[in-house]
Image 1 (cartoon, rainbow, N blue to C red):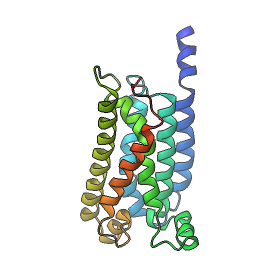
Image 2: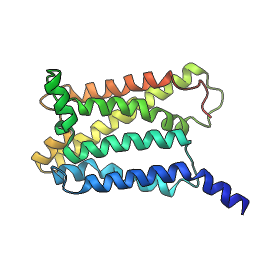
Image 3: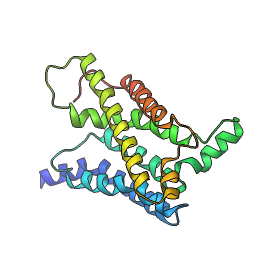
Length: 203
């Protein structure tokens, strides 16, 4: 009984994060702007979220990591509902500050590096031994860069495999030929900033 209570207490944060995400995601899944693009945007969600739930008993992230992953997933849920290039907040910022495009996708890519660095560190190098602070920092940012690049490749493959209109909405390049490179650079910038909030060693 003591173990069960301790386990239940330890599950409060991940369970709360899951509930918040499911409620918001479900609400935003109702009548998205472009259903085909929404489905493409959520392919990774359909795999990642159940995987996190099913593997929690074998590998538990820290409470902070669960909160940061949830924040990132919520940003993504908003982007997939409207498509990233048409999120109202991004349109407002574009019009208010006379920007060249809707930058919501840029914000999310930067947030990916900022928010996902901690979960990646815990998952990939949390049990590593003999790594110094510089090695941990390098591997952390390199991991974010690799994940960001993999996502850009997945976007490209998905876009060329489906209806062109849905693929264009999914990519959200807004006419920028260097969109993928800028997205990856922003993710790396977010990861570098996140390093300042991390300890040199991974728990």
